[in-house]
Amino acid sequence: MRNFKVVLLAVVMLLGTGCAATGPKYTDVAASIPPLASTQGRVYFFRPDTVFGAAVTSDIHLNGKIVGRSERGSFFFVDEAPGNMTVATSTEVEKQLTFTLAAGETKYVKTSVSFGVVVGRINPELVNSAEGKAALEGLAYTGTALK
Image (cartoon, rainbow, N blue to C red; front, top):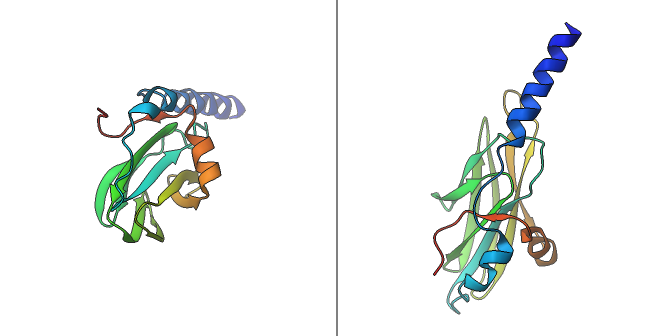
């Protein structure tokens, strides 16, 4: 039985290590990210490149519409009109985050995986701009094509 557990753990770890997002790194696209319009706010969504829960993903909804996916080692951004924002992720349960976005403001939403009953849960969390900016370094851009 012990050998079975060791083999199972090795298989799970092997499968999880190959699930990082692909795409150009932040340092390669930073200069191509357009300036924020004065009438809009910007929300960066990111998920650190950690092994825990690597295979767990979820669509990210912003005010009811899908804007991207929470994938290990990735980031993207969305420009929106100012107002109240609701971020929702869902695996076995839905997790929500609400905040207000002002014109000209940039917010950073970190997603992370926690234990669930059947599968991991994707948790959205608002972080300060210093943490958000630092976290983007080394992550893969998974958003829409940049000009």
